[in-house]
Image 1: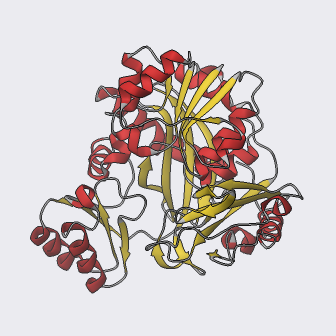
Image 2: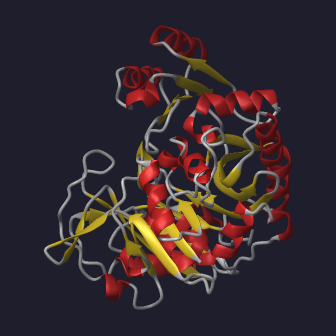
Image 3: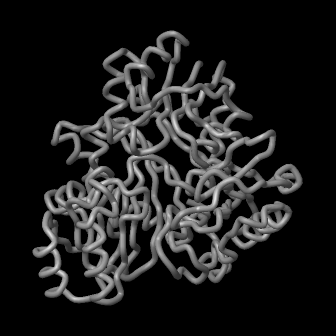
Amino acid sequence: MRVLLIGSGGREHALAWKIAASPLLTKLYASPGNPGIGREAELVKLDIADHSAVAAFCQEQKIDLVVVGPEGPLVAGIADDLRAWGIRVFGPSKAAARLEGSKGFTKDLCAKYDIPTAAYGRFGDLASAKAYVEKMGAPIVIKADGLAAGKGVTVAMTLEEALAALDACFDGSFGAAGAEVVVEEFLTGEEASFFCLCDGTTALPFGTAQDHKRVGEGDTGPNTGGMGAYSPAPVMTPEMVERTMREIIEPTMRGMAELGAPFAGVLFAGLMITDKGPKLIEYNTRFGDPECQVLMMRLKDDLLVLLNAAVDGQLAHSSARWRDEAALTVVMAARGYPGTPEKGSVIRGLDEAAADGAQIFHAGTAINGGALVANGGRVLNVTATGATVGEAQSQAYAALDRIDWPQGFCRRDIGWQAVARGKVGAS
């Protein structure tokens, strides 16, 4: 098969690494890619926003499958436009990608189909939103409705913080994404990430993980795109997986089909496991980043076979097998992240870091004058496996400590909840 992978982050490097291992693969292209992805694929310069140009490349190169990594192109309708050219695409339609593109759409879907989630209000003006927040009190959650690169959510512990978050949304801090807001009740419990491969009819459970959104150790500081993750998530017991499928995933699949937007691609449910069971925090319509990195480390099966089954509507006849080991990834970020990161600093020592079996996935790197340099906020994903989350944690930090990059930083407590439990259950 000839495959085009779209994207340039750590998630896409992990996908490229896994796709490149498939015996089905003849040729892998990636656009725009990064230096790490360039080790697995031929990088091509395409304007991803120009869907006709992408389609023309696919026809010229006889591409058999396009795999779309990030959410932006999906919400913009790239899957629909490529399919109109007769090109096979792994990723949801524009209508189905609303599950991520509009938090308000997802909340309304939950209300219509009795999917457990936090109580909420939707607002298109500042005054109404502030009145609601003042009535409900804190703690409370403020979300920009649209795509905000993982930074449009504020878990406000005080009324002042909530009102400031509303000001930021309506002042344009998140662009068009903040033109409407969703205000939610604060949920208490343990967060987990749950993934399914979907073909429009069938949803195949595809692993669990936990990520760490806050920039600081002890889960402190502002939210980021994710500072690390591990898999499996111990809180997602077989019983909790079954409840999540029955109470959340299956009604979502039915609801989207009834709305004329059957969901095909990756459905990523961000969950809060409360004392009453799983509740949906939000949906994403692509693999998580950095959760994808740990899932790819644990997946036994050929990813390309599974992606083809999803595209061809054959997931009812498929299964996904997982290694018993846990996997853990630590994000190395550039100084200044999640604000304005410092770019251009030289990174050394990656081969030494990977010497004992760790995988170093590139997220925000570039080549400058022959040297590998930081070129983003989240720059590297140092990923390792072990018999337990604690062992995977030790392996990942041992690899990370061999990297020579003084301008980078990381959290030193990724996986702390699972390590504190002292055990991990496969799921």
